[in-house]
Structure formats: structure tokens, C-alpha cells
Length: 300
Image: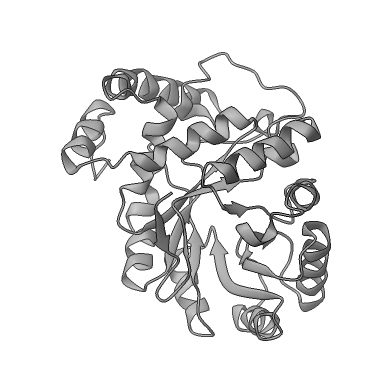
């Protein structure tokens, strides 16, 4: 699979990253055997970049089991999801190392901004890097302003903004900032948590164990817009012998700031299908057609 550098002078990583939120049960329970098979299918398809988090239920523990014997093949990323006090970060890091059955994390990230001073937080992460427990530092869901503040205290190799055909706010500030400052964007939610795969339509209800059932984003208007966008893009994807999921993923990869697109999977078939998106390079002409199909305007 094609790779891109994770920030200036950073390691090269696959342009598709396996997002492990669904594997931990975020989109409903998955049998462990199926989840492990999904991880192995992704690795076999070239998705050797995997992203998880402290807050993704049993995801880290599951990955630890699945990666036994495969750790050296994978660039492994996780996130501290709780507060940024020294005690919590150190505890979360040790818990992640134990659950993932590894003695180092390739990319350790702050899951979201917290009230603690970023100078103190960065000092803790830099110490963890210097002792070999983590190799690179990343951010998730940070604005351009907050990312700039973090950069004052140490190197940042990556940032995880939300970015997809329905959510393009990142194009205004954060993606240009990352591109200008040599920080790799590993974008999350390229499928809009499934809505841009064409799987959900108005009136759909999620099971109680699916976090989307209570997620504020899944309101009637969002589902309507996602369903409409999917319908309009279906013919374009079919004309290229591609699926809607491949189109949505490839679209995010067309942005010059994007290093990798984090895509979840619940089955081996989904992991292999996600990997196929890496082979579709959308042209500027294609992107213009897509904008027209979804009636998108830069100032909208």
C-alpha cells in the first residue's frame, strides 16, 4: 500500500489506517474471533497502521491479543482519553502498554483538549518519549490555535481532525495549518461513522449497544443529508467500478494535508474493502464533479 510521511522527517505510514473504535464495541458488540480476523485481514491488505484509544472500551486489550506475533509489522497509535494530569497520563500510558502487550507506542496522542496547561502535558509526553515508551507525539480534535500552542513546547507529528464529505470545517483552518507546519493529518470519520457508505437512511434506528444511538451527530437532518449525498454519489462511484465507501475514503486522501485516513471496520470484508480505496487517486476534475454532485460551495 502507498505510504506518506507522518509530518516532517516522520516515519512513512500507510495511507489507510485501521480505526479500532468499532472493534472495541463502539458500533455494537463483535465476537472476538471476528474482530481478530478483521485486524489480521487489514494487516494482510497492507493496513499496517492501527489507531485506538484509552476510551475505546476493550479495543486495546483486543488489539493486544490480535497483534501477538504481529507487533513488528504494525505502526501502533493510541490516545489518552481522560484528563491530562501527570498521574492520569502516566497511568493511562502504562495501562495501554499492558493491554496492547507492547513495550512502546509508536504514536501517542492527546484524544481531546483538556484544561491542564499544555506546557505541562507536553513535558510529560516528551519524558515518555525520551524514556522509549512512546516514539512520536500526536493530537486529536485540536484546533489550529491549540495546536500552535502545543508546538511551542515540542514536536507534534500528527493531528486527527474530523474530515469527510459532510464535515469540511477542517478545510478552513486546521488542514492548512497542518500542511504549513509539516504536521501529518490522519483524519477520522471519513465515512461519517457509516452514513457515507450508503448504509443508513431516514428512520434508521441503532441498537442500544451502538454508541451512535445516543450520539448527537445522528439526528434526523444529518441522516437525511448523508442519505441524499450517498444517493447522488452512487452513480459516480459505480461508473468507476467503485463503492461509496471507497469514494468517501479516497476523497479525504485527495487533500494535500492528509497523510492517512482512519477507517473503522467490523469484518474482514470491510477491512479489505477499505484497503482498496488506497488505489483510487481522484483527479481535480473528479473532485469538481463530486462538489457539484453534493452541491457544495466553499462559503456554504
